[in-house]
Image 1 (tube, rainbow, N blue to C red):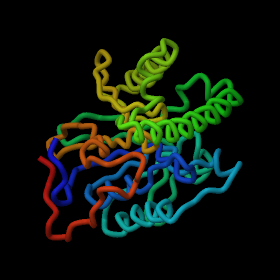
Image 2 (cartoon, rainbow, N blue to C red):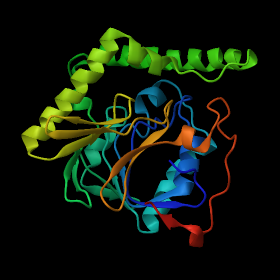
Image 3 (tube, helix red, strand yellow):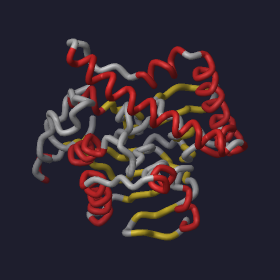
Image 4 (cartoon, rainbow, N blue to C red):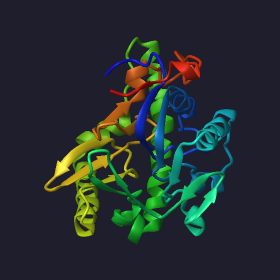
Length: 275
């Protein structure tokens, strides 16, 4: 994976679970990503703005506003931007099939890759039993997740003082705790089953904050991750190849200092296509 030296131009970029309006959102990292990466099509795959959190307490920094402005600017310059609401920005589902600032809002979409594969694009909350059947438990889980993010941030400040690198508690728990592993597996199977039922070749989703690409039988499962901890995006190259971009790793960013290591965006004539 090459480090960014000029703006990379992809055919398609998929982003989800940004959670603007929360303290855990790494809006500065996302803004850096949007400066260095462009595309013909941009899919916002839900939970872009966190209405759940903002109803309880207001948090909105300049960097959150800058992300919105950057996406709108891309739309004005010709990027085809499609917004598929998730459960945290579910109020936008009342505005599907209309355009807001050049951004088309839809419940779901089918994307055809450059090599002819048909991908169902959904956020994924409809296939999460906790969100679908026990909303109170989902809200409790959201509170617990935000508490974990708060704890993890302070814990990592202590680790830094002791000379240790950044460590993600939530990523560790998802990988090691049996129930979390089963939940992630069940979710992937559920959305893959829906893609199979629709007769498409694969599915792109978000929701569970775990980026990965894997084959589930005859269905390609793609999750583009999040911008709270992992800071990942799913991209489609010009030949149809799909790849997960880990922006923290690629740019050697410091999760405890969002503005560390960033550079201004390159000039327009420095843009190069992704290989």
